[in-house]
Length: 350
Ligand code: NAP
Image 1 (cartoon, rainbow, N blue to C red):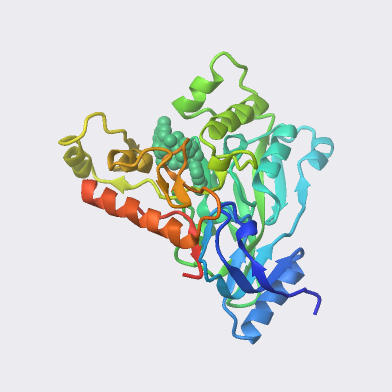
Image 2: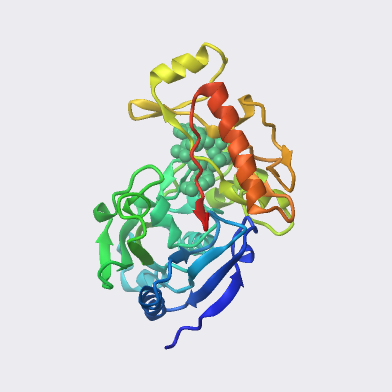
């Protein structure tokens, strides 16, 4: 056996929220072979398996996880620079990134290589492997626009397979990986097709305002997005206690126009965005109008002082406190608007 199996590994430090207990068994996989071996080990020993990436979108229970936690730590980025010389006239830039690469490092690399397509996704915490799962997006861009294929281990067959973009069934913050085929595939790497020398796409007014008077290079857009996210404490930084979170804790609900009209009977200036034949209402607005302000405290848990959508660990919070606060928010929003808010993070060991 080449994998090293640790026992009673504390999971809190491996997550951005920093709460929760231990994993009974833990494996850090640095190669695809490690992943295959760990999955086989779990299967043979009848252990539950949880696949951990950057830990930026998870809440671990205080009791931890009574199975094997497999951390995907496969590194490597290929493409980009190599193709500059080899295909000088090719405007396409194909880059393959291993699942364990830090997402923002990957974005930084693409921007430095003058490859357009992911610059608006700067500063999003987590690993490359997590991005197709959620179809991560920001400021009007989604990874599904640039992902060509995703290489995965199929836990059902034990085979390594390559899924095309269409196979992944991407939609708003979803894919087959977190819906119909949840728990079936483990992402090993993703292939992106970026545009060499392409223009940055500035779709949202918030970003447009931040870019006003500046030249629209990829680097400038990346910096603007980082500034916007930092202001909301959505860039994970040691010295920013408001960033000790799992990012947005709730999904933005999509409701009918009838529902929007109903809300407008009691509230003025309801913010909304057209979403097909329905509308998306910012969850942060619903939470504020239900009586929670930025900086709200509940024991050692709280709401970020800089973004109503982030639940933060104010220091030594337990998972139970985080869950209590989540339930308080859900109950008040349901009472006020008759809307159910759904959490975005994945819950481990509950
Ligand atoms: P925000 O900008 O306050 O926006 C809140 C909600 O309003 C989001 O659902 C966003 O839609 C929507 N919205 C805002 N401006 C819009 C426009 N001009 N047209 C259409 N929809 C608009 O959100 P935030 O929390 O500060 O986050 C900034 C960006 O990062 C957002 O795009 C957010 O979705 C993204 N983000 C993504 C993830 C993830 O992928 N897991 C996690 C955290 C934040 P969209 O969601 O469609 O952008």
